[in-house]
Amino acid sequence: MFVWLAVVAVGMFFLGLTSALLSRMASAGWTPVPRPAVLWPGTAALLVSSVLLEASRRALARGGWARGRACLRWGALSAGLFLACQVSAWRWLASSGVGLAASPGASYFYVLSGAHLVHALGGLAGWAVVARRASLAPVSILAVYWHFLTAVWVWLFAVLFNP
Image (cartoon, rainbow, N blue to C red; front, side, top):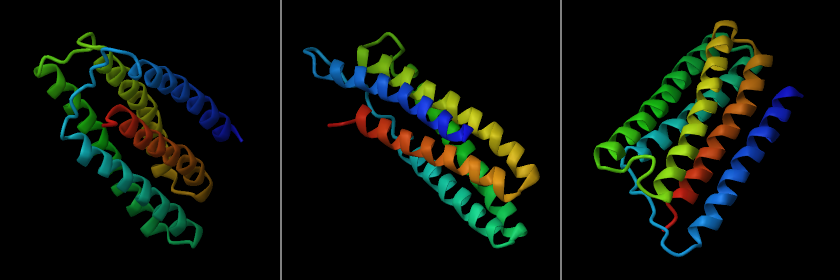
């Protein structure tokens, strides 16, 4: 039950921020942030991490402990790759002269991706705890949260870089 409350709360948080973003994007003088190329492989890594977490959940449900643990490890590695790509994107933008205060588009990108990163770090911490136990109930709870965060990132990516 708690995980669903967390999903609703985090969902409302991101809906509020993206609502503000969308209203700001409609105003005159909006300048979008350039899209760092590293966000594509980072997004793919996040999607892969979600697929592997689901594979782990299903393997554990069938009693496949070895496969479940292996999928958890590879999924955590993919999740870490996503986080590294996010940091790389920030560094690329900063080295290109696009800092937090460069434009409203840059500000929204840093705030939204940073907020997502914080929530993903929390999920990764949960992932570390779950990986030690590798039992179905905690993996199922983590899966709800992680799949939600994956969907949030896909939404943010689409909204932030809408042509």
